[in-house]
Length: 88
Image 1 (tube, rainbow, N blue to C red):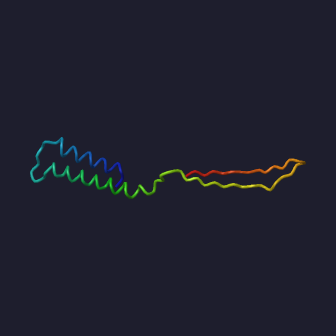
Image 2 (cartoon, rainbow, N blue to C red):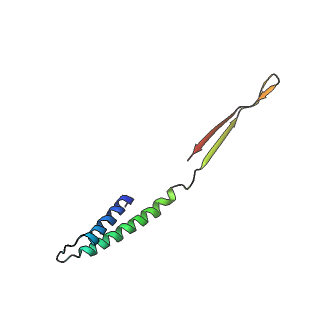
Image 3 (tube, one colour):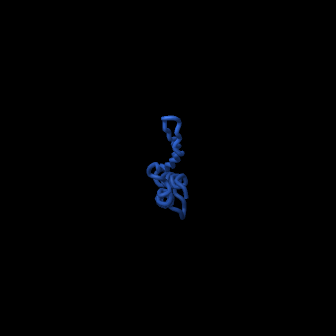
Protein backbone atom coordinates (compact mmCIF):
# COMPACT_ATOMS: atom_id res chain seq x y z
CA UNK A 1 0.00 0.00 0.00
CA UNK A 2 1.44 3.35 -0.98
CA UNK A 3 1.25 6.75 0.66
CA UNK A 4 -1.57 7.86 -1.66
CA UNK A 5 -3.76 4.87 -0.86
CA UNK A 6 -3.14 5.32 2.86
CA UNK A 7 -4.11 8.99 2.77
CA UNK A 8 -7.19 8.09 0.70
CA UNK A 9 -8.30 5.50 3.29
CA UNK A 10 -7.78 7.98 6.11
CA UNK A 11 -9.83 10.60 4.25
CA UNK A 12 -12.70 8.22 3.43
CA UNK A 13 -12.70 6.94 7.01
CA UNK A 14 -12.83 10.48 8.38
CA UNK A 15 -15.72 11.34 6.07
CA UNK A 16 -17.66 8.25 7.13
CA UNK A 17 -16.93 8.85 10.82
CA UNK A 18 -17.48 12.59 11.14
CA UNK A 19 -19.57 13.77 8.17
CA UNK A 20 -22.10 11.01 7.42
CA UNK A 21 -25.16 10.99 9.65
CA UNK A 22 -27.02 8.13 7.97
CA UNK A 23 -27.88 4.78 9.47
CA UNK A 24 -27.79 1.44 7.76
CA UNK A 25 -29.39 -1.68 9.18
CA UNK A 26 -26.75 -4.15 10.30
CA UNK A 27 -23.78 -1.91 9.49
CA UNK A 28 -22.18 0.74 11.65
CA UNK A 29 -20.98 3.44 9.24
CA UNK A 30 -19.02 5.18 11.99
CA UNK A 31 -17.31 1.90 12.88
CA UNK A 32 -16.38 1.31 9.24
CA UNK A 33 -14.94 4.83 9.12
CA UNK A 34 -12.81 4.23 12.19
CA UNK A 35 -11.58 0.92 10.76
CA UNK A 36 -10.64 2.63 7.48
CA UNK A 37 -8.76 5.38 9.34
CA UNK A 38 -6.84 2.81 11.38
CA UNK A 39 -6.02 0.76 8.25
CA UNK A 40 -4.83 3.91 6.46
CA UNK A 41 -2.68 4.97 9.41
CA UNK A 42 -1.11 1.51 9.67
CA UNK A 43 -0.51 1.45 5.90
CA UNK A 44 1.13 4.88 6.07
CA UNK A 45 3.32 3.78 8.97
CA UNK A 46 4.40 0.58 7.19
CA UNK A 47 5.05 2.43 3.94
CA UNK A 48 7.20 5.05 5.64
CA UNK A 49 9.07 2.37 7.61
CA UNK A 50 9.85 0.27 4.54
CA UNK A 51 10.74 3.05 2.11
CA UNK A 52 12.50 5.47 4.48
CA UNK A 53 15.82 3.56 4.60
CA UNK A 54 16.06 3.73 0.78
CA UNK A 55 16.19 7.49 0.81
CA UNK A 56 19.58 9.04 1.43
CA UNK A 57 19.98 11.59 4.17
CA UNK A 58 22.74 13.54 2.45
CA UNK A 59 24.77 13.65 -0.69
CA UNK A 60 27.42 11.03 -1.18
CA UNK A 61 30.24 12.16 -3.39
CA UNK A 62 32.47 9.73 -5.27
CA UNK A 63 35.60 11.51 -6.45
CA UNK A 64 37.96 10.03 -9.02
CA UNK A 65 41.21 11.81 -9.79
CA UNK A 66 43.29 10.78 -12.79
CA UNK A 67 46.79 12.20 -13.03
CA UNK A 68 48.74 12.18 -16.27
CA UNK A 69 52.50 11.83 -16.14
CA UNK A 70 54.50 14.99 -15.74
CA UNK A 71 55.02 16.80 -19.04
CA UNK A 72 58.18 18.85 -19.32
CA UNK A 73 58.34 21.67 -21.84
CA UNK A 74 61.53 23.62 -21.48
CA UNK A 75 61.80 24.99 -17.94
CA UNK A 76 58.04 24.63 -17.20
CA UNK A 77 56.73 21.43 -15.66
CA UNK A 78 52.97 20.85 -15.90
CA UNK A 79 50.69 18.20 -14.50
CA UNK A 80 47.20 17.62 -15.88
CA UNK A 81 44.56 16.48 -13.39
CA UNK A 82 41.15 15.24 -14.52
CA UNK A 83 38.44 15.07 -11.85
CA UNK A 84 35.09 13.34 -12.09
CA UNK A 85 32.43 13.91 -9.47
CA UNK A 86 29.51 11.52 -9.13
CA UNK A 87 26.89 12.81 -6.74
CA UNK A 88 24.23 10.36 -5.59
